Amino acid sequence: MPDYGLRGHAAVVTGSTSGIGQAMAHALAAEGVDILLNGFGDPAKIEADRAALEKSAGVRVLYHGADMTRPEQIADMVATAHTTFGRLDILLNNAGIQHVAPVEDFPAEKWDAIIAINLTSAFHATKAAIPLMKAQGRGRIVNLASAHGLVASPFKSAYVAAKHGIVGFTKSVALELAREGVTCNAICPGYVKTPLVEAQIADQAKARGISADRVVQDVILAAQPNKAFVEYPHLAGLLLYLVSDMGVSTTGAALSVDGGWTAA
Ligand code: NAD
Image (tube, helix red, strand yellow):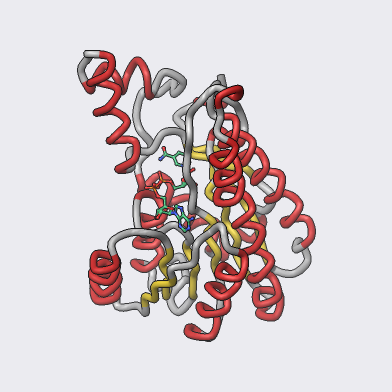
C-alpha cells in the first residue's frame, strides 16, 4: 500500500454510522486521520464503535449527531471538528436515503427529505468547511454521489435529481476553489453491498419467490455489466487517492466506480 501522507489530518464523514460512510471513515482512520463520525443509530452501539475505532486506529474519533436536514446542526458539526482537531482537511458528504415510487405517487415529504439529506446537506457542510480549508491553503471535499448522478432509473426521481444535483454542485465548488488548494470531486458508485442493499435482496427474493442469487443477477445488478457488487476497498482506494497530495490535479470530476454501468 502506498503511504498517502495523511497522518495527522482531520476529516468529517457524514452518515458514517453505517455502510459506505462507516467503511470510508475506517479507511481514513487506518491512514492516521482523525475522524468526526455522524449519523443515526443506537447511541450505545455508536459509542462502542467510536471507542473501538479510536483504539484500533490510534487516532482521535469524535461523534456528532447532526441531523442532515438541520443547517444549524450541520454548521455546528463542522465547527466542532475544527475546534477539536485544530484543523479540517477532508469533508466527505456521504449521508443519504432512498425512496422508490412512481412520480405520481411519490410522497412530497419523501421528496423533500431526499433533497435535504442527499443534496442540500452537502451545501451546508461545504459552506461551513470552505473558509477553514481556504485559511489552511489545502482541503479535500468529496461528495458520495452515485451512478444515479450520471444516469437515471425509473421510480427513483428524487434520488436521481439529488444525485445529478450533487454532481453539478461538485463542479461549481471545484471551479470556485481551483486556486485555493481545495479540490472537490464526486464518487459515483454502482451497487455496493451495504446492509441496506442486503435487506433489499432478502425482501425481493421473498416477494418474487426466487433465490437471493437470482435477485442479485437479474434484478439488482441488471444494469451493472460486470455483475458484481462494488466493494468498500474499491471506493476507499479512490477516496484515499483524491484526499492525498496525488489528487491535487483532480477536481470537479464525477468518478465512476460502477463495473461499467454508465459506459453502456
Ligand atoms: P446506509 O443507509 O448504510 O448509510 C446511510 C448513513 O446516513 C447512515 O449512517 C445514516 O444514519 C445516515 N443518515 C441518514 N439520514 C440522516 C440524517 N438526516 N442525518 C444524519 N445522518 C443521516 O447507506 P449507504 O448505502 O452506505 O449509502 C451511503 C451513501 O452512498 C448515500 O449517499 C448513498 O446514496 C450512496 N450510494 C450508495 C450505494 C449503494 O449501493 N449502497 C450506491 C451508490 C451511492
